[in-house]
Amino acid sequence: MEVDDVSVREQLFHNRVRETFICVLLFICLYILSYLILTHFKKNADYVTDDIEDATANKIALWLCTFTLSVAVCAVLLLPISILSNEVLLIFPHSYYMQWLNGSLIHGLWNLVFLFSNLSLVFLMPFAYFFTESEGFVGCKKGVMARVYETAVVLLLLTLLVLGMVWVFVALLNNHSARESLYDMWEYYLPYLYSAISLCGVLLLLLCTPFGLSRMFSVTGSLLVKPRLLENVEVEMNCAAFEEASLSRTLNRGSTACWVSVNVEPLRKQFLGVQAKRIALEMRRRASPWQRNLFYPLAMLLLLALTVACVLMVCFHVLELLFDETAMPSGMGDPRLGTASFSMFGSLGAAVQVVLILYLMVSSVVGFYSSPLFTSLLPRSQDTNLTQIIGNCVSLLVLSSALPVFSRTLGITRFDLLGDFGRYNWLGNFHIVFLYNILFAGLTSACLINTLTWAVQRELMRAFGLHKLPLTVSRTTIPLKLLLANGLSKIQ
Image (cartoon, rainbow, N blue to C red; front, side, top):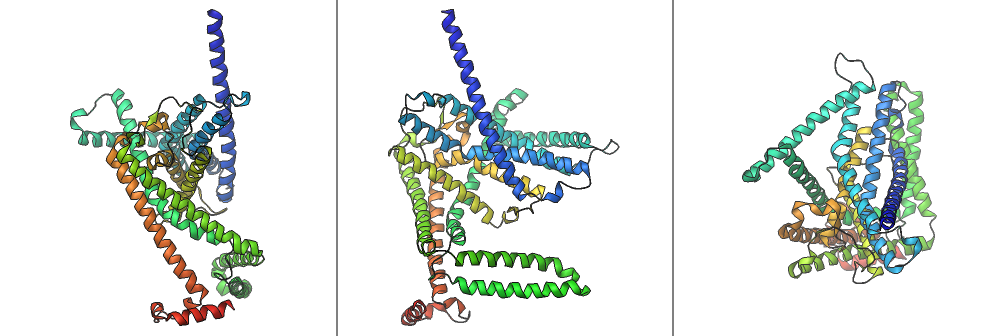
């Protein structure tokens, strides 16, 4: 009996070591990837300054931002990894090489992401911001440790302020259940704060994702080569070449004339932008007919199919909420992977779920940076200061940490939430979940219809040359015969 107990403890120890090694290896890979991404966007002048103290503080803040971004990427991959792991175990149920892939590993990964996401959002990112802005207390010796002391004090005061506001807010809502002890604050108010932060993230996804789904068509269209019917690359390239030549002559005159030396730097930036545009247009002109006439329609059809699939799945989930109680999002204590597929269509349906989840995340990021409120946060290559990097990391973490709850609330997948992700207070409210699904389906449908109608009208006007008409001429009063005749002459 003792031998059996020892063997069981050894097996548990080996399983824990294996799971820890896999999680650490995954995090190291994501950390390296995140560091490369931030290195591509960071402004190098902030890290090679003459002040060694400022350069060290900026490097420490960049490391904290890298940690936060890696946690955000891991949060995006939570549901895809869980769904694919279940399908792999269904296909290879008795494989020796798949024994490391089990429910304990997936459950531990969810708990770690929840812990690190809240740690980064509540402590690390505020610490990074205040650390870069601090200089140390007056009268103390300057240095990195002086900044650390000042940042710690400011962060402690901010934490007390936030906890006090949460306590007052909860006491106003539920006066009869107001707590007084610190233990109750840890057990009740901190989960309430996490639930409020998650609700804000899900609401942000509700606003950004429908707008991003409509913007995906224009963003993808700008990256691909359009058919000649919809775009005249020769004219655009000639205009860019003429503009580049004009700016080049202006810069050459400005380098010799002292009275225009103040305007040289903006002109140089404009010249580099026009030059990059001309090079991109030349590459698009050299595109093959396959790239021009096949890839663009296929990409547009693929985006349309994915968007329509999301809307249909949400509409179906609305009907499920009315007749099936299990359609409500809930937590799952012990994930039994490899027992049944989370899609009625098997492995193919699970693959579609993974694609839709990633597509929704990309669309939400596109919609976030396309909105007028957050356009200033858009990172630029080698020209993003540290404050913008911190803001981008916080925004991406809020969006990515809410993605599992967002996907399960909309019914994109039936994989229930693991760990503390399924303990949010508002998940059990039928009215909130039902209204959320209705709003998402309505907003996405409205944005999609508006985008398609305006896009078709704009491209037809551009193809038929009607965009060159003066504003005083109403394009709706143009006869259909003249429109078709103009279009046929341009095609010929």
